[in-house]
Image (cartoon, one colour):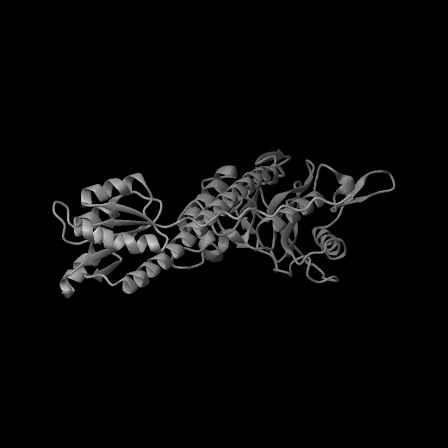
Length: 418
């Protein structure tokens, strides 16, 4: 059995170009239309500018040959009104004139004529001018088709971006749900948390990895970069420090009796570093601040891995930036992380914050830095808890010149009650 022959796609025949001849002289129109018919154009005739306008309103005219001097509406006025019509396609306009004065030529071009042809018209010159017009029309048609294709593709892209935007909004909600509480009281401590992404989703995360009436462990970290990859890494690492699931918490070590022991902040940093190197095939890294606070004695033990220096706000109002800096997590397999100790008294406050605060820039590109950040805290010394963190975020936005800031803002504030 023979296979049916594939049908060739039908090729749409080229449209015959239309030419409108406008002249109050019947003889002149006949001379022009004779050549135009021979050259294969579809020809329309009008004896006045008014009649020509009516034809242009009713049908698509590709090329126009119009006499300059006509009673009633001359060629200049006809050209001016023709250009004022709302049309999807361009019409190539040639003025026929016995004038050869430069000022007259300028006047014709100024009202919208594309070309001027001196009468009496020679057929070879007319043919050449028409072909020139056809090339212009072909380029215009190609441009229109390309613009239509661009519009279609742009609309498709806009739909795609709208869908991505909706997904990112949902991702932002999910990311912020990893910080379910913005304020909690544990023993003698009041803990406030603030997370604000610079875009839809970010690489900052804050929280607590351990809590009991006698002891708490809090953290803040910042994954390098921005966007989806940083946000996915943030979610995974936040799960490693989930205080609600000791068995999966990298900060906890199971004991033979079924209980869990808490690792020191420096050991937690080492364990997280090993996990990133061994299990996560990525070029991303993170800075992190891990702090353990004994709520009975006020002893503070922390590990700083590239994160900004944490701040103790003394009851007296004095500010103490502490910590030794350290290298980020996820860069060197055998990296070691030192610990730092301090003591908190009743009424003191301890603040972990991201570099989005200190590295904020104003319109002149001047960075706020630690001194400027400390000045903001001093200015809001009477605020406490979530109110203080909200005030600091507002100040950073004002310093940056708008609601949007260049980097994520995250902070954990621990206040020891009397």
